[in-house]
Length: 197
Image 1 (cartoon, rainbow, N blue to C red):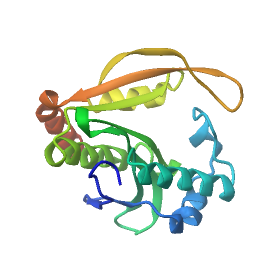
Image 2 (cartoon, helix red, strand yellow):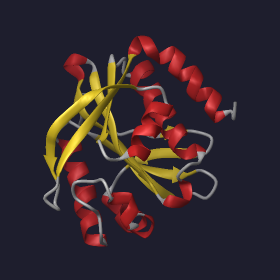
Image 3 (cartoon, one colour):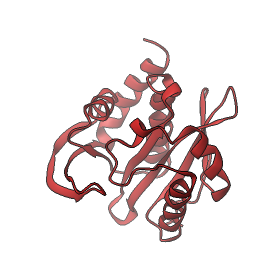
Image 4 (cartoon, rainbow, N blue to C red):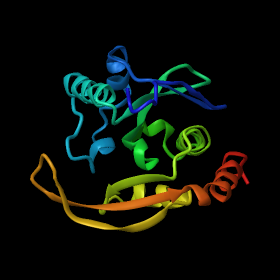
């Protein structure tokens, strides 16, 4: 397991984050094969089989101690609506990344993503005592960049020629972070967004 971070469930008012398992593959494929979801991802998910590989890779990272993957469940319906994870975990430096987050289109631009981030950040800073949470996205993914800025993360810079995608495109990656001293103000901001303020 990831350096002492055991798989866990995080419960909110509109979403629950539960430990990802291979049993979630079919449900994830039912909601997660929309091409637009994977437009900016290095390796797109296009079938049940590629979703199985995606989940298997996440679970392998969990076994190696570098990730804790979650399935995102809608609390009102009990249905799977996406996935997210803690990744690149380095507890020796009190640092991790929140990423690999996707939600089916019917739950985008709803409170689901905000609450996912609120739950993950609260656990990271208040329970795990993390000093730094990182976020990364494709430089061309303006939608993701806006969403990360909206939660209060600081854009730190661009890693040029960072990833070669399956299509052969060379991707530049934007780095963002939130550090522990910023968390109280960001927590209040996110709480306000969740309350509709």
